Length: 339
Ligand code: SF4
Ligand code: SF4
Image (tube, rainbow, N blue to C red; front, side, top):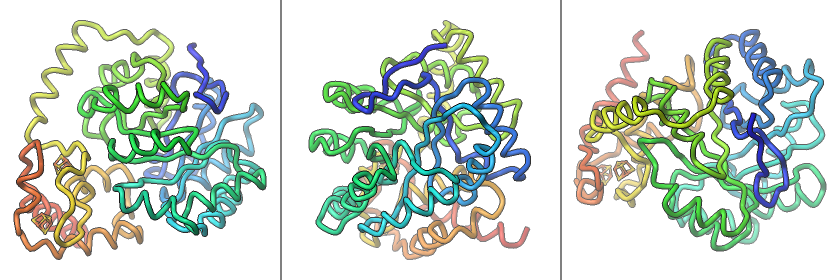
């Protein structure tokens, strides 16, 4: 089983970590069994977030029954120095004294980035937590490659987390080489593009065969956890058949898949377009009750202000019919209330 050094954190981790979004979808008992199994198989790094509802709590329950040390990674959407209180909450939920990596979660644009890095911003709160020994390393996660490039150039972070899959391979061109050059640890989220890719073999082998990164596929069932582990341990070079499937799936999604690049921004109504365009898969991944999560509801309500001005259409390099997709997804979301 391949292990490697996570950049300048000097943490040694299995080349495959684990992501804590999917375990929100299942019952507590099953979630705890999956986390235990994943760690017992050999996975070293568990990633979660304050925003993933019960995920930190469930990891905390599982850790009570696990003997070997694991590397924990969590994150918060809070943008001010009050993120320090979020670190305390994460520690409480996971019942630990220290979290190895804590990220600024989903810093989506330069405005957001300036805010977190300003005096009184979230970066300051995380530095305080690090100085007090509550966390070891500060990271940043973003769906925007431009933000990650800037963060790497500014060199304040020890770890970055980028979206990476064969449907969203762009990080491999610029972000990963830049981060490697500065010895920054690299975590790769969404190897299945947020549940869009259903063929796990080619998807996982694609990300695992990329050098220097640690992908963090999640799993909500034991079956899925074992399947991912089998792919990881049995060698993950892409086969000719994988390459064929990847090309076929890419063609299939070409005109409907949001790459979360944010080139469509800024929206005149300040709508988080990539969130609303990807709403169905996000809610599917978060599981029952996701539509009641506060931060999601706020983004959804904001999307109702779409004036159909069409400005975003000109900017989307993939020609996605954004206003239509927003309308369609809001109608789908509203229909959930009647189910
Ligand atoms: S069409 Fe809607 S989503 Fe696009 S820029 Fe205008 S208001 Fe924003
Ligand atoms: S809608 Fe288009 S431009 Fe906007 S994030 Fe998605 S792919 Fe990028």
